[in-house]
Length: 196
Picture 1 (cartoon, helix red, strand yellow):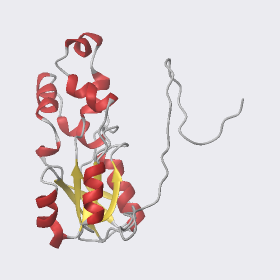
Picture 2 (picture 1 turned 180 degrees about the vertical axis):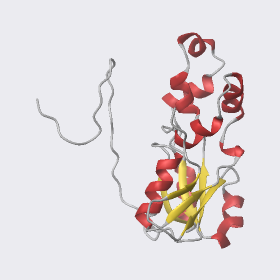
Picture 3 (picture 1 turned 90 degrees about the vertical axis):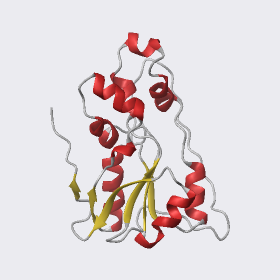
């Protein structure tokens, strides 16, 4: 059988992929990946790194219950529907995507689609206390999980600097992770993952 394109993978268990298609509400703007401009601030709203950490656990660790937060992040991720709605209704976000491919790739997509380069400045607040504890016990850096891990489905978006106070008032958990710059589209400055 010949298969072409799409979301294809191999697994021992049955998986089902669904696609939801809908129309935007009247008078509510659609936030695209391509609306950012140099100087826009890059934000994340949601958990980063826990789903990737779940994949590194051994069976004993998974069964212990100590990392149930990781399990929930991987198997039952909560999409940022509320946050996305607030950003659209408040006309705050200039571009947006999710972090399913990791924060680094998400920022690369937004900057590339918008014709900007980006500088990533991840703050420690993007990692949960559980992720930091896990990484500390295993002598690993939380930054790798949070920045390149993926499968988290938090929202990565850009805003104009003058809208920062409004953003933090309606989405207090949003964390600034970088800034859009003039430069080669899709080029990322700042954090560079180390190859093992």
